[in-house]
Image (cartoon, rainbow, N blue to C red; front, side, top):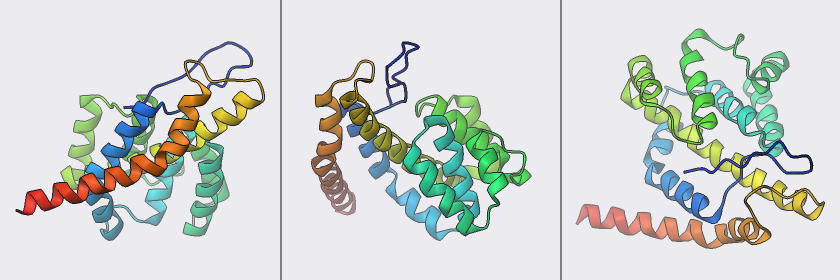
Length: 201
């Protein structure tokens, strides 16, 4: 679903970003699981502090500066300490509640694998939180992954202008993702509405 773009060459943008195809696939995946996100936001499995820990665990892998800033502020507002936020952004979970550690490790693994976690990790999530809990937690992970990579894609375009392009990308891919969101997201919404109507008929 997500393409990794990395290189050790100096003056190359090295964060993971979207291509048009991977962005389209990510949008479709999010909309296909939109009911999970709604249920998660209304349920009691993932509270505000838990969700912010998940957001920061994913963001520290993808390195989106916008999400790091925004969710650090949100985590503070939710009651997390500055020390714990700094730990989470460093990939350390020592201050997190023990019952959330499996989810945070899974969130980190999900991001590191580019949205393709292994079967063992999926099974551990189900055994720890149940099928519903796994769906709720993964819904938050999908959303922050999309935010991270959108932010990184925008930064890749800025970096290209400054002479540090992303590997295996182009200005047209980056513009296509950023401007294409105005088309791809509405199309995904329409597709979901028609799918729901078809399912009810």
